[in-house]
Amino acid sequence: MDMAIPANEPERLEALASYAILDTLPEIGFDEITELAAQICDCPAALISFVDPSRQWMKAKYGLPPDLSECPREISICQVTICNNDILYVPDLVSDQRFNTSPLVTTGLQLRFYCGVPLITQDGHALGTLCVIDFKSRELSFEQREALRRLSRQTMVHLELRRQLLERNEMLRQLEKARDRAVAEKSESERLLLNILPPSIAAELKASERVRPRFFDSATVVFIDFTGFTRIVETMEPASVIDQLDQHFTRFDDIIARHRLEKLKTIGDAYLAVGGVPEPNRSHAMDAALCALQILDHLAKLNRQREKLRLPPWLARIGINTGPVIAGVVGKHKFTYDIWGNTVNVAERVEAAGVPGRISISEATWQYIKGRFETEARGAVEVKHKGLVNMYFLDRIKPDYSSDPAGLAPNERFWKQE
Image (tube, rainbow, N blue to C red; front, side, top):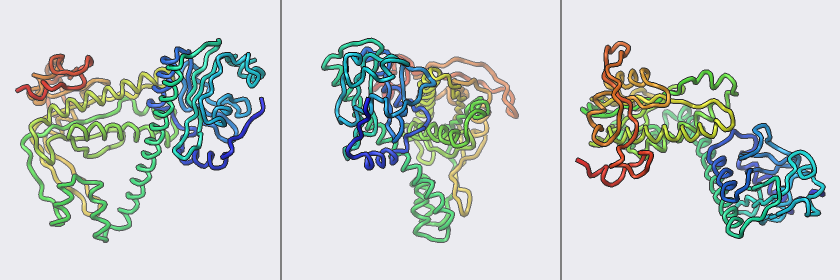
């Protein structure tokens, strides 16, 4: 099979490099798209791949061996797809003179069916393909082919969002360097403050050059800590460890923000957030409970994909406690907004006394949320330096107040309940 080359090959390869996608770790978003493509087209296998100068590299695959990650470009069927810039539909590869001598057809995988759609940027560069394959000839309906085409567009949306996230991370790294360089420059400091402090705290610091510590008589503290972290990272490169932690914490950031909680800091593989601070509200305990349920759901979905790839799961303990805290800013050159008090200490102990993959809450938090959530009493649990503390497992939203069967999302009645 002669290898055709796209007319815009140099520009195409430059565009591909800008997405920094080659040889990256599996990502659940791409994995789910391949699984969905296979299901829609009723095919046993699907993949998302990208074509560089010498190979077709697979970012995500469904129904193919875990150790299969690339094939030479000169025998790739997807190579033809990116040259056509349109869907390539071959019901029977054996009957097609373009492919019936390919090693992919005659030996190895012994493919018989192929349908692929190029992944095309807004500038018209075909980076790779989303394709479905089968080991026997088959036909796809017009609706199935159009669904595959729509999924390819969604893949490009996901890829573009990923590129923007990489740019965001790079921007944050550059801001970190700038903060070290420009402590004495007021205008630069003002810009940086908004990246590291809540807006109201940053405004106070800008106005008076200090932040007055504040007492909050009711707040909810959330501790998240990965268990078995050492075992997971023993077989990973340092860069991969940081990349995966960054993906998890970025997702946590999104969930935290949606539920009006304030992320305070990360310490290694631990994550600390608080509700009801610095802006007081009456729903902070429920917000924290909803947030914790969705974080565990995110990890559960991720671990289902990791199980398919025979990778160890990322399991987390979550501990929640409600009570009074003191909040303020510490540091002179590098500011940190933080909280203190017995409530914080108990939250950390509740997390430490928890169970991987579950949410533990103190009795104080339970009193705020018991009417809307299903919980399991754990009784009095011995807590280091705190004695016996009554704890509960938080399972889900009660069915009467949930908009989904899993009990992860509240309905309108949830918020109207007194």
